[in-house]
Length: 339
Ligand code: NAD
Ligand code: TDX
Image 1 (cartoon, rainbow, N blue to C red):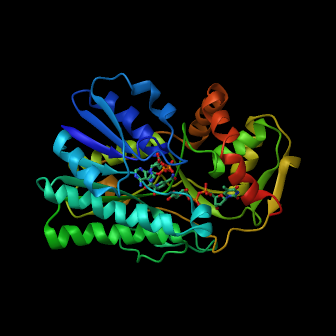
Image 2 (cartoon, helix red, strand yellow; image 1 turned 120 degrees about the horizontal axis):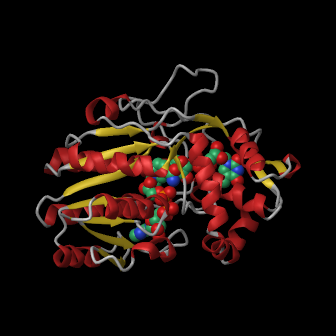
C-alpha cells in the first residue's frame, strides 16, 4: 500500500511516519509538506534514507502540484495531518487557517475523487466540540456532541470536518475522521504548552501561564494517537467519526509544576500572564466508540510519557535550540513581551 501523509514534517505527522514505517515495513509512505515555520526536515532525518519513504515539498492547496503527485505516486490512501495548528496564531491571523485547513482539505479530497475514489482520513481535533465547564467533571465529548467552536483555529478544523462528511455523502468518498485530545511527546514544536515550558525551564526563563492556569486539557502520548489513526485507516467504518483520548485531564498549572519538579527548577519561574482570548476551559474525550469498535486503548501513562518527553528534549537539544534561535524569537517577543 502507498500512503500519502500530509504535514509529516510537523509534530504528529512526523511521529506517525516514524511509527508507520516500523509497524508496516511493507508500505510506502509519501510525505508532502509545505515546510511552514512548523515543519522541520530534521524531524524526518531518521527515515530519510528508508527506501519506502519519499518526501515532497508541496502545499496541500496547490491543486496542480497535488494532482501531479497523485499521478506519479498512485496512492491507496491519504492521511491529512497538514494544518495550521496553533490557537494563539489563529487569533492573531485567521486567514491562513482558513486557507490551509479548509481549502487544503478540499484540494486533497478532490484529488482523491479524481484518481479513483481513494481512501481519505482527516486528522481533526477535540476542539471542534468547543469546551466543557470546569465544575462538571461528569461531562465528556462524544461523537454526538454538537460542533461549537471557540477560536478561528477550531472553526477552520470544524469547517474541514463538515466538508469531509459532505464529500462522503455527496460523492461517496471513503472517508473517516479522528478527533483527538491534546498530544505530547518528541518533536512537539516549542510554541505549544509542554515543549515551551520545558525549553524555558532549561533556559531559566519565565514560564508564562495564561490566566490562573486552571484550564484543563486531556493529554495523550503522541504514539497512542498514531496507533489510533493507523487502526481507523485499516479497520474503521467508512463515513464515521472516532474520538481519541485517554481520560488524562490535567490543569495547566499542574503540568507546569510537574515539569519544574522533573527538571529540578524553582516555581518562582512561573509568571501569570494575560489570558488567551476566548480561552476554552476544559476538554475531555469519551473514547468509548474507538475502544468498543476497534479495541484501541492508550498504552503510555502520563507519568511515564512526560518523563520520556522531558528526556527527549534533554537528549535532542539541537532539534529545538535551532528552532527557538531563529524566526521563533520574533514570534515569542510579539506574543509574550508586555503580556
Ligand atoms: P504542527 O503544526 O506541528 O505541524 C503541521 C505540519 O503541517 C507542518 O509540518 C507544516 O509545515 C505542515 N503544513 C502546514 N500548512 C501546510 C500546507 N498548506 N501544505 C502542506 N503542509 C503544510 O501540527 P501538529 O500538532 O502535528 O498537528 C497535526 C494535525 O493534528 C493537525 O491537523 C491538528 O489540527 C491535529 N491535532 C493536533 C493536536 C495536538 O495536540 N497537536 C491534537 C489533535 C489534533
Ligand atoms: O504559553 C502558554 N501558556 C499557557 O498557559 C501556552 C502556549 C499555552 N498555555 C495554555 C493554553 C491552553 O489552555 O496551555 C494550554 C495548552 O495550550 P496549547 O499547547 O497552545 O494547546 P491547545 O490550545 O490546547 O491546542 C492543542 O490541542 C488541540 C493543539 O495546539 C491543537 O492543534 C489541537 O487541536
